[in-house]
Image 1 (spheres, rainbow, N blue to C red):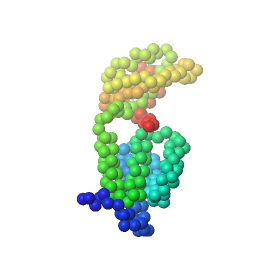
Image 2 (image 1 turned 30 degrees about the horizontal axis):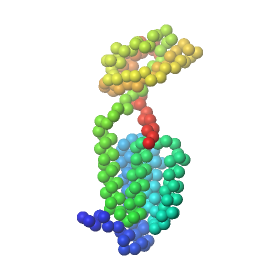
Image 3 (image 1 turned 30 degrees about the vertical axis):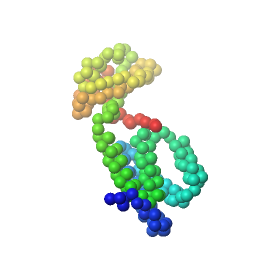
Image 4 (image 1 turned 120 degrees about the vertical axis):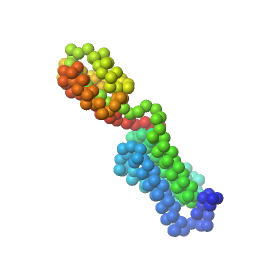
Length: 222
């Protein structure tokens, strides 16, 4: 069992050892990429990057092995990536740190530790994703009403009937002020009742436009 803590580079560095470290880093990235794909709508480019990134980190660290000054310079270069890209989701940033750590472990020759670490952390992320932690994403409800309708309490009974919670998050005028466009953050009691909910709302807003859709996930920055 203690063999898992042994570095494959302890016997010296060779082309075969480099390929083994690189393959292990790529496998760690592939595992993380598959898990992130299960957690949400990650783009194809991002998932490919998760596979490539640990291999790049592994190669760079192997090249600067033993040089403290060069290692610090490389770390500074990697930190610049954070400021050259738009703010990402907390999940995506965690995935980047995951694969970078796996790449560092592979660069040190601890390929079994890197694989075990990637598998365990990925399983923890997958488990936490399915636990009821925090607020659910819910739905967005957009209702267009005429200016003659006093909308503050016009739909309260329908919200009580079809939703668990609701909140008016945005109001704006349209069509030269003759219409109001209301945006609500809602959580439906039963998503299959969405059509009945819309039909009853249409009777209140004069059959004007109504849109209900799944709430888009916001970028949670670290």
